[in-house]
Length: 296
Image 1 (cartoon, rainbow, N blue to C red):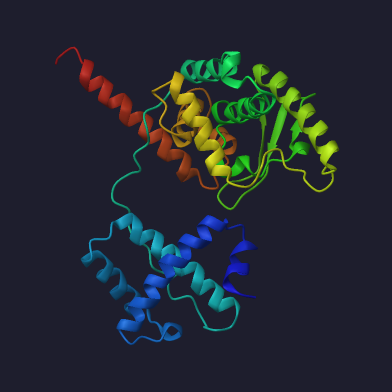
Image 2 (cartoon, rainbow, N blue to C red):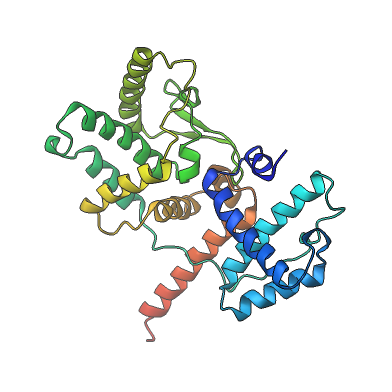
């Protein structure tokens, strides 16, 4: 089994595999210049590589990403019996400060964003093809603004994951997120029903019912979501990207649910991931109190 197959079996996307290859090649090239046999690399030599990257001006986050890629590579070497142990596993690089989240959109703002998109004038999608795409994009935007799905989760959804009778959707587990079942909003039901019916008709014509269970196209999925956000921005310039939408949904959930519930709803594998959103919310609140304090 080659390294690419090893990663594909563990759920790494084609894009991630490509980026990891570039990061690992930097490490390999550095080893060549230092006359280091990659299979006999020591813990201290990896630290020397990190030090050389810092001297080159590489950011801390980029170095963390490189070490993560190298760690996966050594996991592969261990599994194939090439090396006895993963010497990179013990290396942990401290992040510089807390993750800065984008400006939060309120529940009302998110609902307005969705409704504005649903109610786009007919001339925006006048022919049959653009009308079908608009129906699909309404469903995707709804999953972003109401269920807070990450872009990668959208591509894993299958038609069987939707239960319109119960008004629920199942989100399968991914490399980064846990599986969960979430409620659909009432204004999502009809657009989703319409899209599923259209999908069923198209699949029947193309005889793809059994071969393609997926709800949305899996090719160039990130481009598809970027295009939807681009359309949404025309009416709602406050939108930055899909990450901002997801962060806003999670932070709004935290205002009315306990942290364990939000961890489940967001699909976070670790409670620490959820806590980052709560600490950001408290930081924003502190700033507001400082700004409007009566003693100022």
